[in-house]
Amino acid sequence: MGKFTKWLGAGLGFTFGGPIGAIIGYAIGTMLDGVKIEDFTSEQEDYKKTIGRKERPSVKQTTAGDFEISLLILASIVIKADGKIDKTELDYVRLHFINLYGKERANNAFKLFNGIIKKDVSTRQVCIQIREHMSHSSRLQLIHFLFGIAKADGIVAASEEEAIHKISGYLYINAADYESIKAMFYNEVDSAYRILEIEKEASDDEVKKAYRRMAKKYHPDRIQDVGDEHKKGAKEKFQSIQNAYESIKNERNMS
Image (cartoon, rainbow, N blue to C red; front, side, top):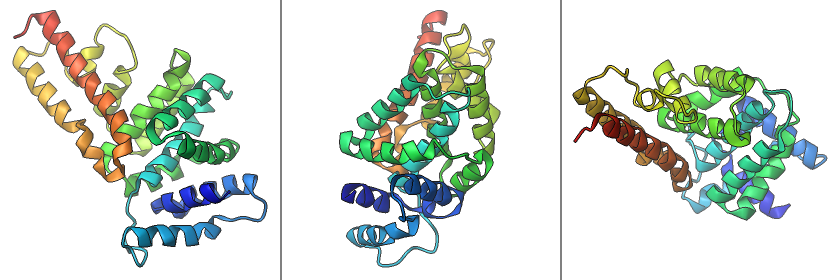
């Protein structure tokens, strides 16, 4: 379990404590009898030394590991929302993590995930902890990923959308941002307009302004705080903005 302990010890930032820490502790307990989350402190200290941190900072910082663990916990909530654990959705999460982190790190994540998914999770408590330590742009990226999980079996079930909507509210994602991301996963007539957060009656100038605003909001550089490995998902979201703009331009014959 050496590689697993090093991975988890390095990944614990703000997620070391609070309700998320308790969930991680439970998951570890299902894997290793007699092992607690506190046992990973030495791995965390070794990691901090490698990046020049001699002491734990007074203000917890979001790390790529924090984002990774937050994804796992929120994904477990969405996957269980329809009352069953769908293999297609599990495979999507695994594939997504392999694409992001490589096979070895993804396998470590799934060792933890197999314990997390057995635990009853308080959505509200987990989201409060995340929103207190994670930027708005990073929280938007979490919502985008969760819709990808829900859509993995070809359709976003009503129960799954309801779970994501609840998560979004607890993460302080406003209605316009939520509907924009949601529209990226629905092939509907007005999806392009909803993605750009405008009405179909908007003028051409308003369309252009909306595109510039949304491109800035969803630019991959805005989630640098949680590591370069998460930029791939951010680029997919950014591409949806560009595709929506091109679709409207073609529809209106805009120059």
